[in-house]
Image (tube, rainbow, N blue to C red):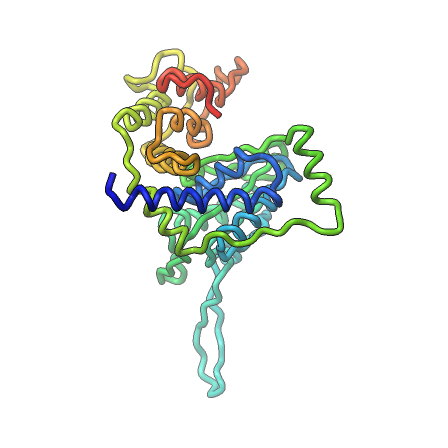
Length: 333
């Protein structure tokens, strides 16, 4: 590790502690959810937030935008939403001299943090409008390439139970999300704290801790963080073991899977374990980071076979079992 990397990493760790402290009064409890959302931003990726209505998904995104100092927009996805409603469109203007010309009006995608609320309610045509934006950080409109803001992140939400009238995201778009963050019910003490904090005359506000330039610098710093060969091997072993029909996958696991993660999953894990180590005040990731992030990074990149679903098997439990076997970490937090 270079001499300048250690103090820079320690300073960034302190700023991240301040960011977590600023988020806590507005998004009470659910520290694991907050950490995963921060990891997605620090890794330069996008995240899919899956949770029931009223679990605070919108509040989390809004709070993250404020604390990280990002310009953010929110799009409510509906069946009649068109690609131009996201990307923008050209309109015909007439100037004072009577001359006509086209003027481009930017859509809400031209921001630094985009919240795609209930993304699976829009048609596949509209969902696909985000594909280029999420992967290439630019959009093509009327044959012209238009770069998006820097940084650019998409935090999309999805309801796990109400599927009537929805369009499930295709595998190609799911793979663009660095991780899936499942938001469960809070425990009793957390729910009591939420009840008291949010029903009074005043609510806590979140002050900016980061800015766009600082977030980009943090992302660059994370890519410089060294990763031990044992961690690299654990990432490769885990991803390859979750692919049906390969030499690394045992017969039982191969029969339980319909399809598995591609190389982008290994890339996502490589970045996310570095970010998690930094968030916890460490200078290098470990096998425990791989085990802890296996389910968020892999669950949306895999599918159970029909026979496994008929047997009532759980994809999350399957991933946890493979991660435990490969990393030797018994409990993924």
